[in-house]
Amino acid sequence: MELKKKVIKMEEWLKKKKNIQSKLKPHVDLNSYFSSEEIARQKLAVFSIGEITITSEKITVTDPLVYMDRNTNYYLQKVPTGKFPIYICAAMMGDYGDRYVAVKLEFSDKIASRYEEALIGNEDLDNFEEGDYFGFFVDAGLGTIVDENTINAYCDFEEEWDKNNPNAASIYDDYFSEIFENSYKKYPEYQREDGDWINWTIPNTEFQVPMFQSGFGDGLYPVYFGYDENNEVVNLIIHFIDLELFFSEE
Image (cartoon, rainbow, N blue to C red; front, side, top):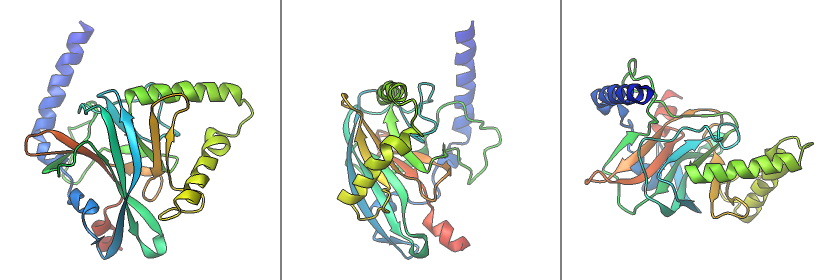
């Protein structure tokens, strides 16, 4: 009986989603962040931070230090499995420094012909208005893209690390901060001295957990899946900073 209620509830939710489909599109050309030299007179640079391994079709975007745990929700959209590259678009924003304005996980070299917001299936769609988005929360200034198997492997690692380091201030201060600093030393371009990105492999596993600066830090950021003309998913893009909107408001 409980399963039947869940199925009915999901059917109702999907009907609501269909009714607001046009509102779930980004209001900017996301492809331009990875193909243009500048947006809103801000110079752009796109660079790779390596690949991640996806062995589950269930994927999510989250804050790796605050919200990544075994209860994490995954997007409804299933993704291909394999090894896929991640690209960061950085903008040289003058007094604001070099900021990561978008991040792309590329499942295919095809260019997306449309984008739709990534959803997990429990969003409140009743009061969704044009220009709204759901997105993911950041409380530690970082984002990550991971699949279900990677999260489980990370939780295994973190639980063991916590057990072996009972007096540690935090896993960031006592473990990840050095990895970030080494990333800056090895790849100083588009990073601050403390480091702004890593692509860390969980020890004794095949899984990578990329971590990257989240635009202006803590906040809510939208995520979109890109689709080709055959409606096949070709990429996932996190949009951290809408440059045209930000500089028009400024």
